[in-house]
Amino acid sequence: MKLTFFVKDLVLKHTFTIAHQSRDVQDTVIVMLEEDGLIGLGETTTNPFYGMTQSNICSALENAKHLVEARNWDSPEELWELCKESFVHNPFAQCALDMAAWDLYTKKKKMKLYEYLHLNPKDIPLTNFTIGIDSVEKMIAKMKEVDWPLYKIKLGTDHDLDIIRELRKHTNAIFRIDANCAWTAEQAILFSEELKKLNVEFMEQPLGKDDLEGMKEVFKYSKLPVIADESCIVASDVKKCHGLFHGINVKLVKAGGITPGLRMIDEAKSLGMKTMVGCMTESSVGITAIAHIAALLDYVDMDGAMLLKEDIARGVVITSDSITFPKDNGIGAELV
Image 1 (tube, helix red, strand yellow):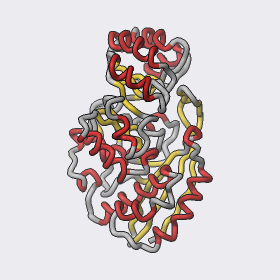
Image 2 (tube, one colour):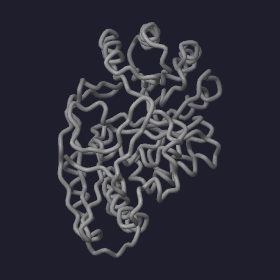
Image 3 (cartoon, rainbow, N blue to C red):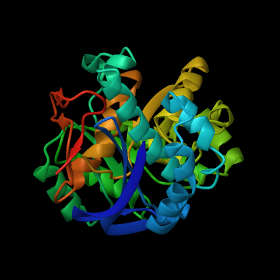
């Protein structure tokens, strides 16, 4: 067993802005697990909001290398448990390793990951396409560039309702909105009534992640469902979100990989909550991994590779009416 990893820069088609950051380039870290002539690939992007950098991700992977290469594990779940102390402060690094382990493991089984999980690609919901914060004119231009039936609109400005009203004039697509913690409870409740009239499906993370009292009010009075993102990072957060949100957005990078992501989805379903999978502007390595579990979800946000000027990998191909997986077993993505 050999573990290697390296960094890459993902250049975006357009500057991507949300309530608390903007970027033109997304840094990413690729992990490779090699054994018996097979290679498993995993990926994690960096994120300054969570303090995750290429440097500390690579450092965490280096610290876990001896555990991985000693090969005292037989499944991705066992590896995840074996290494969890090494990654206690860096779930992003653990995600990349876990993803690579699942890729390698299911390749050895001569199965695609979704086959191993007994999932049917026909059950995958349509992904939204994300429109970042920009001038209204540029947001409209981005929608015209990618004509899609379902958009996620990033908000967090002083004129959020005006943005949605103007965008609505140019498309009949369903909208989802994501305020990335930018609103107060009063704003969220007030906005929800107008947003519902504008064919918005749900609101994602309207308040700060620790504003629990505010979320109680939003959950009670909002005219739209609310989905947790920043408030639901790891498995222990799921139960805390019950009664505050109608559903959770599981992001594999933040959760620590596919292994805990599947647990989070199961727990949320057991609590009667809606489930969503999100992305962090990964290349087709990470996005293809997400696609393999997407049939479990009510909502899907896996457009990351579609936002790139140039992808570093080949993998799942997503259109507005189809999803095509790679022919190879495992996750199936490959670097180019």
